[in-house]
Amino acid sequence: MRALNSSLLLVCLAAPLAAQSASNSWYVVRIGDSPVGWMHETRADSAGAIRWNSTMYMALNRLGSQVVMETAVASVESRTGVLHALDVGTRLSEQRVNTSVTVNGRVATVSVEAGARRFDKTVDLPDTLLGREAAQRLTMARLRAVGDSVRYVSWDAQANAPATVTRVVTGRDSLLTIVERSTTSPLVTTMRLDAAGRAAITQFDLPFGRVAVVLADSTTAMAANGGGSLAEESYTRTLVRTGMKLPRAREIDTLRVRLTLMDSAGRLPDLTGPGQRVITREGNAGAIEITRRYPRVRATFPVDATPALREYIEPNAYVRSDEPRLVALAKRVVGSERDLFTAALALERWVADSMHFDLGVIFAPSVEVFERRRGTCVAYATLLATLTRAVGIPSRIAMGYVYVNGIFGGHAWAEVLVGADWIPIDAAIVARGPADAARFAFAWSSMAEGPGSLTSGPALELYGRLRATVESFTVAGSRRAVPPDAKPYVIEGDRYVNEWLGMEVTKPAGFRFVELDETWPSKTVVGMERGSERVRVLHSMRAPWERDATGPDVISAGLDTWRIEVESAHPQALIAEVRRGMRLRDVGSP
Image: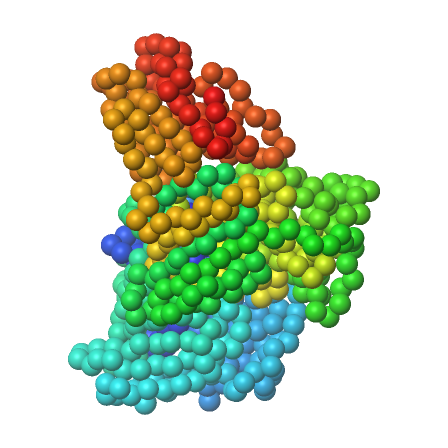
């Protein structure tokens, strides 16, 4: 999930910097106090056209992995400022994805190429698109005093769509301070421009912290080529603690949760969607109820590619469902099965068993995911969506949050269309049947437009800015209300009591309780220590098709596994003592 949050940094690759007259400029890219990369820009004026080239490179180092993001943008505009062409090359994995936009009057032709395949479409434009040079001229001619503003239409390389851009002067000293907003993103960009229109510094806020692109010399800029490591809190701030732990999370059928933005002036996005009902929504807060979705009808496949379904059945640059190797694999996995949802679950199992989690991959086309069998939850979802489409099952990717071990974390999963209903399936966090209700989505995409629709918009409004409080949940037919003043657990003498998990642990004589408030990525629920002796009760989940773990140190209950881990000169005796003092009410008992 952390790497999924890292993918939001893609936004800054397309962040609009003010055009400048200098022909060769270097920048250092920082997140907080850490240099994480560089940017290089050049400008050329020849053959009646103005050409801008910009390359931005960033690398984040964490947990032994390096997440690399690189984008090269080349634009061509007329001397009057009309945008003619834009080429964007993006590398968020081993494979580079190239997007070319050619403008002819009020129509843009967009070509996306990944590997040896190219996918074309046309987009109607609301107005004449201005190029970067024209935006710079307009800015310097019209923005002089605080409050002055300009508006123009350009192309947003992140959203892969036209955007109306508004710039407003908010300050003026030796530099001009401009705030920029776009209709295709909630991102607010602040630029400090010199007299020639060159950006001395550009800043915007992402979930990991404030990004600053600072003018520098080439030596200083390239010194950041190795990337950087962010402070731990930069990552943990994107995780939303729930204040209590949900039992049997992968079996939850309904969940009601209250969401609040940390910014009191913000507005909570409308999270209405399939299986998601907004209960209340006012200002920066609201409550939603998620209901687990089961197929209501028995459907068969392949499904006809009607105009309404075409984008969810046909291949695109990221979902290469016509790749012969993927088609052959999908057909082999489903075999003679004709029930749509049963076939989708068979493909879910194949992806879950075949993939390996890798923080170093952000967004990768499905052919690359298939070849490497590595990636974050986005890669799992992309491959699963591809395999389902390969046998004629409509699919899409959902982006949102999922509950794991005391937190909601950024996550992606696939959805398949069964009859008229989109049913979630998740190869990264597997449930028995449809994906559980301990999750909510804020964006859905066929990936025909690329990842921009998933990583901008609500993603930027929520990640790193959200609080969550569980109000109720239903599991195994039993609904539990969670009072506002509910405690996650209590200590009663020598006993740890967690009424939500139905768990009690009596500590051995002389031990003290520790690590009682751990959340993901830690698996610890209860810790105990006595001198150099340590005990940890760990929680993990298994896939539905995996056997229950067995042994004196293990308790299995449904898809949940509780393991006793000890450090002691007499480990077996200590495990036995802790085991005797454990009770799992309503979930299973030793």
